[in-house]
Amino acid sequence: MSAEQPDGPGAATPEAPAPPPVVLDEVLASLRRLRARTRVRVRTGLLGEAVEAMTAVGFQVAQFDSGDAVLEKLREIIPQGARVVYQPCAAGRALQVHEVLRAEGRDIVVLPDDAERLGENGSWREHLLGAQFGVTGATALVADTGSVALAEELGFGRAASNVPPVHIALATADSVVDTILDAAVIARGYAALHLDRPLPRYLSLISGPSKTADIGFQLVPGMHGPRAAHVLIWDHPKGTGTGDDALRTWVLA
Image (cartoon, rainbow, N blue to C red; front, top):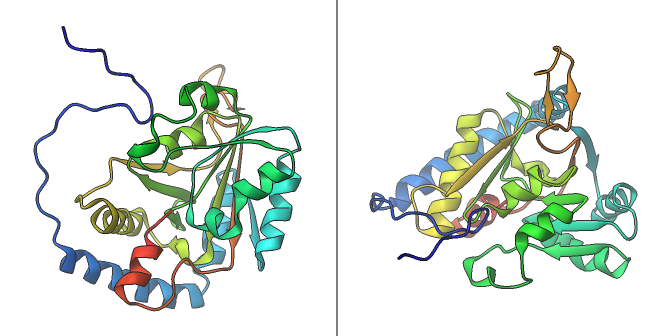
């Protein structure tokens, strides 16, 4: 009899056919083209378009010039004593989010960002179900649809964005792109450069808080996911330049 596999984030998945080899030169060339085009579009108002679209789908969006201002907004949203699950991300690491929130009295659990940590902290499911706030990064902000794209390998970011009643996405201004296809290019780059895979195991597209009109055609928030969703955009680049090291940083959530 085979052992039963756990379900949920981080669970083992059935063996799949071996993926085709990653062609790094092709991936890097695609990322360079996208980054150059996006930089031009940012100068002509792309970030403003993304903020408008995200607001239209129900996100509460705020932009900040400094890291201190981002942390102050987090303090405003998350009260002392609140239970928080945090998926490590580029902006969060730069701001030392989990250290700051924990030191100031929030009950924060850091979710795994690699398979070696899956055995820590007991039941991740219980932490997720008990959390009042989920904090994640953002692989890309999609101006065309007002979506937050989140590429990852283990699925904990997806859970942190979907299970707690409030989701907070920490993003940087250089994460904005025009379309979902652009976000897919970045997700492919993340998989190739960090996982040695052609695609990530998870790519979530989050378009505002949960809402449904299944019953009586009345729109009700928070029925199948978070009732509130925030996007905090820090005017600080994940990576500078166009070299390979900068691209490796740019594709991270």
